[in-house]
Length: 114
Length: 110
Image (cartoon, rainbow over all chains, first blue to last red; front, side, top):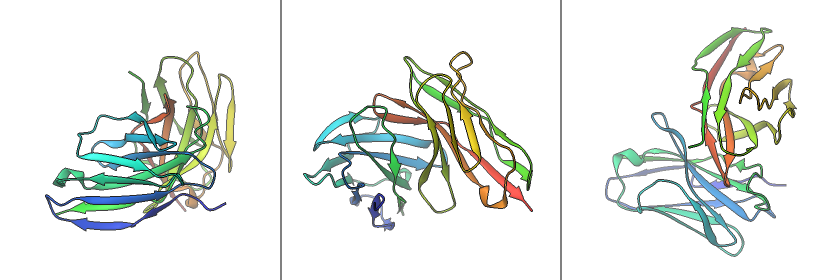
């Protein structure tokens, strides 16, 4: 089975711009979660989508949003970028059948905001 | 709220040394516990997991036992290799999301 894929792998944006990141889960997985990884804050949960609905949300401002499509692929959008949004954004997929399912991670998208 | 605390790194060991990375957690209920590993420039890879008290997860020579009485999930390996150099994250599942420790960087010297 193919793993979780994320595109693009690297992005450079300037402050004020917006960005869209994409995640394709493992085939058959219906849950997609997003995490932000920074040196200062570590790994923080952004949100989880299951069957096209946001099922869980972390403590991030409304500039961070996401969606999930009928094929379980997910996108994450960040509007009005700030320097502090520079991070590695990781997507993880799971079957979604249990809230304690194992999550499998993609390689991440490295976002740099200048 | 739920949280995970890991021993601070970096940890530097010689090849074939014994490894222990401490992890303790605070949680309501009985979460599943995980160890993930991150190699430079990559995402997180699941190393092992345990879903209930006294379960032992194991993979690639690494082991960790879910200890409810001490709320711990320490990672151990009997003989580390240079290829084990990476950052290790302990995590618990809470309501469908993972809560991570701060990560422990391991460097193994030949």
